[in-house]
Image (cartoon, rainbow over all chains, first blue to last red; front, side):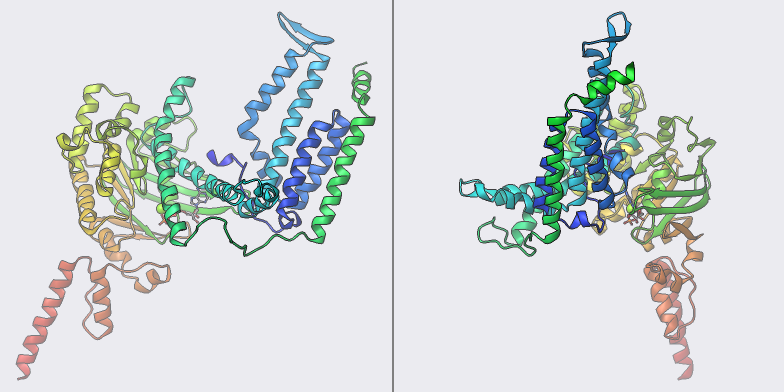
Length: 279
Length: 292
Ligand SMILES: Nc1ncnc2c1ncn2[C@@H]1O[C@H](COP(=O)(O)OP(=O)(O)OP(=O)(O)O)[C@@H](O)[C@H]1O
Ligand SMILES: [Mg+2]
């Protein structure tokens, strides 16, 4: 159950996407996220879907695995959907007491829910196809310009590496502890919100104790190997920007340009389409 | 309480590139009151198997019956199952969370919805069963105890639910020889006093040879051999091939046999080995005398 959370997980596979330069992937994902807010109609979403589809199929990560990552945030998506559906004013289609559904409401609800789905799917693709180590290497390298301003980039990146590295470990630990408490009759699934929150104590306490233990062991192990921060440290696998990265960057640029074009020229198209469908 | 498992299969991460078949059509049964030990090398599926017996893991396919209840049936209430099946996990000390030992041991009984008096009585009883003095330990924080003591508190927490079937997953892992023996003695005394069925997962051939009525040997998600210790430890070469060995006494006897001494059969304890050697040496001595 707890293992359903795919955000921050890495999916080992040999694909062109896995081999791309992490710096490029980070920037590309940022542009992808921006593009979600640039496009304002379903035509744009077709573009996003197409791009995401190609990206996912090139990455060879099974779609089922990616979709599983949506499960934990289903509630948020549903909530957004319902809120938009009932709270948008406009042409009323259906009404019951104070609840009313409008044409614009449905449109907004679908639009917002899809945006969230695209957002989660796209950003989980970054960690799914990039080893945590490479990801932080990429971040460290992208932050380099800020180093002169005194930002401890190496240390930040190291902290991030460790945090990412321990997400699966902590999930595993949580799973184990949950099982152990369930064996002692603990019940996490029924009862009111308060009862359920209280039921988390037997999980959280051992989890924190475990996290501190792990942190201590790790600090010891790092010191034993003479780790002393980023000063003068070189990389075993230095990042290299290759031909395929340039190609990918070009594709991304085209994609973003299309998103902007869509925003500029096709802004009103949806309204017309919706109108046609309803009529 | 008797257990019947039929065609139990469990696949982790089903459908993904890295799926693992941890259990492969396992079938067995255990009689009420029996002491069964499960051995097998690392990753052979022991922990996966026992987590099915109280419904923590759901099988991919297959059925499990505990007593009269079919626990794989969707209608079965899990609380009822967990009340009857106590499961002590590997390194159980990491599940401790309460402020005092007393409260931590009481967690299980409380979840069963028992009366306060009954809970108190059970905490006292189970602490004494695991060999911890109530007056001395009840009000201490579980986090300031030694590793061995923590483990006992954790085991007490499971025993306090008074299960009819007690399952222990490597309860002696990482303990010094002294605590190792104490934990095993504890298991024996719990069994004597409560008459519960026991399933013990272990990597220690000496322990299982001496304690168990029957041994299940697991390899790659299957039970490949099962029977009384003297039976399963006959196949020295086969056990070696799946990464296991013989109890020390049996191993010594087997090596001696290879060196030309008369066969001793499967010895399970140092005591038996001593008896055998004394007989042999005594025999040798008399032989020597006769020659002279
Ligand atoms: N939560 C899990 N997710 C995925 N695979 C798992 C999980 N737990 C166990 N496995 C895999 O299932 C197989 C059996 O594991 P299991 O823990 O049952 O072995 P074990 O016999 O208890 O080993 P050990 O003696 O080390 O405790 C192993 O191949 C393991 O990698
Ligand atoms: Mg195990």
